[in-house]
Amino acid sequence: MFTFLAWCLLFVVCWPVALLALIAYPFVWLLLLPFRIVGIAVHGVLALVAAAILFPARLLSAPFRL
Image (tube, rainbow, N blue to C red; front, side, top):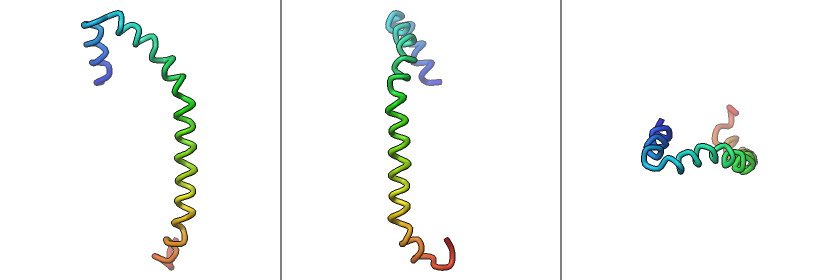
């Protein structure tokens, strides 16, 4: 909602820039999509490594439950 209100304010102040932002937004989103996918993959790998490293400590801290 804030983004829409900010765009409306930009449209009132400087409508050519607002229209350029409206047209350029999907292309910027598509350009940044591979970086988001890589970020999700790196986050998953780091979570897996952390779980593998902390697993023995979890077993020692609560020996009767996993």
